[in-house]
Image 1 (cartoon, rainbow, N blue to C red):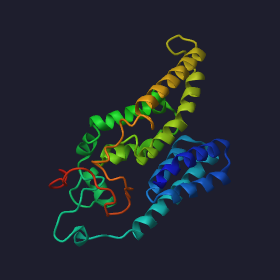
Image 2 (image 1 turned 135 degrees about the horizontal axis):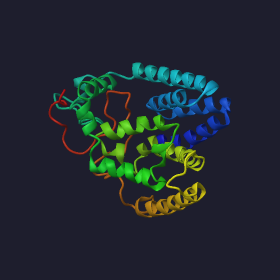
Image 3 (image 1 turned 120 degrees about the horizontal axis):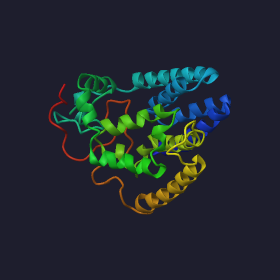
Length: 273
């Protein structure tokens, strides 16, 4: 899946952003958008995060990044084919898509937004799922949940969290799935600033030396990372997506077609509104 290329590209983009190397930054924005069509939503979140959390010139570049990503996403959505019921089979039901819990039929971007807007409580309840909570714990526990307390950049987690909460296909919340790339590069990028924030805090934390607190946190991160990799890493063959329950093909979120079929029969009826 080309989505795995987004990880190193995004981390290099963050490095260029920290150094204010704008030529390299925009080159990497273009490369990230070329990875996948739905990367436009991810990059729009990056631009929004820059607008909200960065001052001065960087905020202007954030607006421009968000505008470029949004325009690219709209072009892709407009160019995507709009399949009718006949393409789902001769009178048969459509196979379940990545958001089958919100609609039993092929769901597009507009339908998804309407479903969430009409019943946000039901949409949020989809995230209270043991498998999804375990997936997020596996991603955040090795870094002691530090990205959640970072002062800057948390909005970049938005797109990946939306997919995890609203998605019903196991590929969207599986550690061995390429779709974990929507989250893990952001987790990696936000952890060092969160540690630096802890180190230079104005108030003492539990009356302990902040240098020792940071050193202890680094040691815990190393131990947790090793244990997590040993238990759920690439060589463990555990905790991944059940390939019998999900076809290992890309899920294109900007299209009404279904590119990856989840397990089980399609749900009957739409989500309550």
